[in-house]
Amino acid sequence: MFILSSSSSLPSPLSLSSSRVSLPPPSSSSLNLLPLSPHFQPPNLACSCSVASRSTAELLHDFKHSAHTAASADEARNHLPHSRAFLDVRSEQELLSYIRREAEAGKLPSNVAAGMEELYQNYKNAVLKSGNPKADEIVLSNMTVALDRILLDVEEPFVFSPHHKAVREPFDYYTFGQNYVRPLIDFGNSFVGNPFLFKDIEEKLHQGHNVVLISNHQTEADPAIISLLLEKTSPYIAENMIYVAGDRVIVDPLCKPFSIGRNLICVYSKKHMFDIPELAETKRKANTRSLKEMALLLRGGSQLIWIAPSGGRDRLDPSSGEWSPAPFDASSMDNMRRLIQHSGVPGHLCPLALLCYDIMPPPSKVEIEIGEKRVISFNGVGLSLAPAISFEAIAATHRNPDEAREAYSKALFDSVSMQYNVLKAAIYGRQALRASTADVSLSQPWI
Image 1 (cartoon, one colour):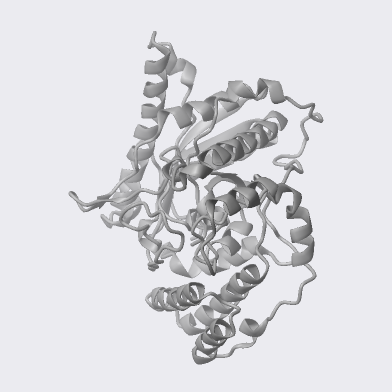
Image 2: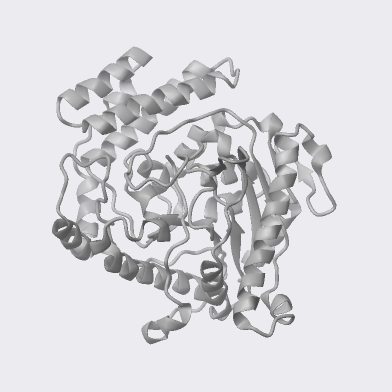
């Protein structure tokens, strides 16, 4: 519902040499994001908020011309009247009644209205299971704001650029997302591995280095979960991380308000590249634009980027009944490595493990249609970071470049898997801090 990343089908960074642009000197302050253009709005691919189906020709036309309309759309969004009735409701009955009235009045497509009701019920049930004595109050407060933001976007859709910077005012979408996900986390059964390494990353960012976190990906709420686990000890990292995000989380009306609050590089996932074959080439061109934006950011230095080289969320293995990190795509890994290598500033690729699938597990298989069912639970979560892995050290033991590339991808994946298993032992094996190993030191920095 909230976000996330898929590894994209990106061209080689070496193919961008003909599109170099002059850049200002790197900023001395970390993570100063450059204003980028042009804007684009992805085509409405089976979007659950669309009232009627549209032809492929219309989608292509909209996509190619959206760069010229994004700025005017954003300006209109800030001036159009917006119903704020959700913020005035005082009970569950009023909230559900208002959803139905908006649908009957034609202001909400029926499938979006149904998704809103389902989201409310599932969120309520999850927060109530937390045992928080103020659960009812929290649910109503958070859901009224969430539904208000969803309705606003249905009325006037937000347009994402290839590089989107989190919107913090006049409405703070980042804090909204944090407040929404926080009640879903059982902090008593949650852990951070090697928190000192996040401090090391922050120091490198302030020195002008780039850092890329190579991670598995479990839920749409991953960015909020990462930020919530780091907000006490590493708030700078929590707020400034840039996520490589698939197009679905910037199209789905129940996702978009949460995506607006995150720093994103927007791409099309390999898994959905051919959902509509006629759009495949247009998607590739959009990915090329996004890669250029990422290259510009990295050349400026002090960037922290999260990417999931698996190309999507981890899935339950039906044969074992277990969750585990999905295999990494070596070509996506190599593209990211070369972007860092050719940025002209020091860069580091660090393996990051994330365990949070029970908070909001994905569908059992990849779906083409937008608007998946959101199952939500209250549960413990975990995050762990390992030191950067050097490509040169691994390549030195392989004469064949393809073998070196595969070996490097495997080394990063093996580290993520190792850390994941430690988190799993702590959370689901009920070993808590005793699950720590020589390589992963667990802590609960919020206690």
